[in-house]
Length: 96
Image 1 (cartoon, rainbow, N blue to C red):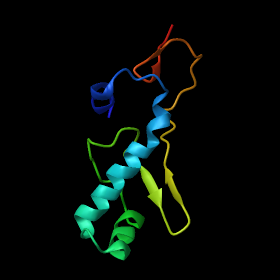
Image 2: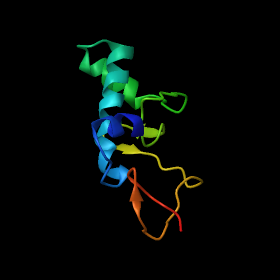
Image 3: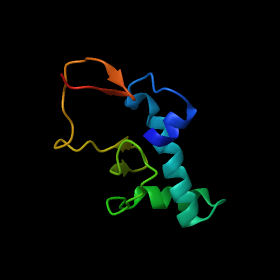
């Protein structure tokens, strides 16, 4: 994702701004697996087990939880940290 963003110019916003990127990649994944025009089959793919999907095109996470009412990324507590904001470089706050 960072490579694709850099190709468009400097990354000037935090990466979580670009969560729509993953949404497009998830939609493409579902369309590829279920067929381009079958929305019900695509929903079934997304509501299934996505834990084994390793799509390098996704930017923020490869862990998503979908149901008829839940459509969120599943944050991994082992890789999420709170940092004191400093300089924003390529959409990520640098460590001091």
